[in-house]
Image (cartoon, rainbow, N blue to C red; front, side, top):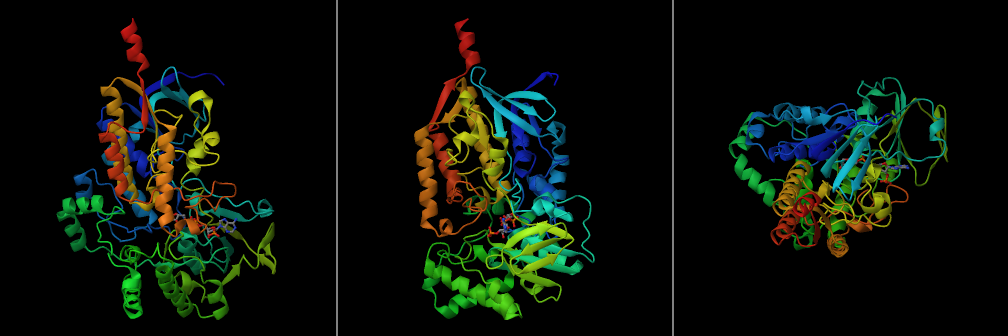
Length: 545
Ligand code: NA7
């Protein structure tokens, strides 16, 4: 391949999703030259890819799953529903791109195939799939915590000759299920959101379930003009509340423990939250549900009873009953999921007792028999949190790759930096609150910290920053200590890496919520404790001459 001219920037950002878009805006505000690369043909990241039927925000929802950096943006944007669907979130992100003229610095349809640190020049060089190269002092990895599709390695799956779609890589053209026999593998958020929609259209749906899931009513509803006006009028107060709140949303978390209440009081609270629906279920819950086995049991029993009430066939209901600590897998919001199993055209296969043996060109064969299908939907999730960083696999000092560095554990400091990878910063990486926090707000807060760190380097004529091994170790201990207070590490989930064979198995998310932002800000104020800095080669060379 012919070598192409090298472009020089202050910063290269990889990813034009929620985090990368803000990174670009912020770095430009700082007066830096920036180039963003993304493999998609437009902005949106996970919201660009996840176009499967039923895809919606399944967090606390609109209008607070949004950027906060621009008052005008908030004032001019209308959210229609509390759980915005994929097209509404993407429309918002496209509007942000237009409004802040982001696309002029984003190169779409471009995969970064290599990223290498040059120790002498103190910069990163990236190469794209077309052989294009660019270098920058700073590499910002906004590669997404839920972006690398997890495609199951089921024997013979490649023999299936019908249509096959992964929910996280959904086609842009409409997919018709009309009159077709469909199998769906996976009952996480994507499966639970899409199965009712597919069942309304398809001739038959076979749900291939490995782990039954607790799912809670989404409670999606229209946002009234009055509510939108109220949010606008009180935006500054709400934004402060978001920053102060543990998960980054303007809500009041419950201060009571489950066992402080009587069984009747608990049931009344759960029932009220169930009827109300939405992510408020978790925000309004007792503060010990994820900590105390006994408290957890009270909610688990409540949800199991609900499933048995909704699903008519007792054998199917039994198969749908989850048996792990409730909310220790990512909580799921559903809209008619359990009711779907009352339809004549839906059947459930419990893969734990009836595993997939193989595929033919037109069927999936489980131990109990053959299921003829026209379409296979893989709702099998992601190589989450660390997967997209490992797919990028940057090479740091001495050419050491991230795959080597992260073989046993995702070594990092503050969830932002990695020893041996100077001037590389992650957004929503392992060791950060990432998927446990309002993600647009989290990206803003992390990116502001990164911006301050860059300014610190310039003020002190420093060329490179990276964490020490000791600080990485201490941070890992803090992440684990917080996780170990809870029941989360005791359940197999994508939070613990259990969904991808061969991944290090541990809970890698920082569970301190908003406390994290105080922690990283304190570190900076105290002179960037835990980091080592290198003098800028350029200024050292200038002084010598
Ligand atoms: P999830 O939540 O990881 O769900 C994936 C589902 O696929 C889950 O039910 C898995 O079962 C199942 N799965 C994965 N691999 C296999 C194989 N090999 N065989 C059978 N079943 C399998 O991904 P989603 O896309 O639904 O949601 C991801 C996040 O996006 C979500 O949490 C929200 O934050 C937004 P398992 O439970 O592992 O037994």
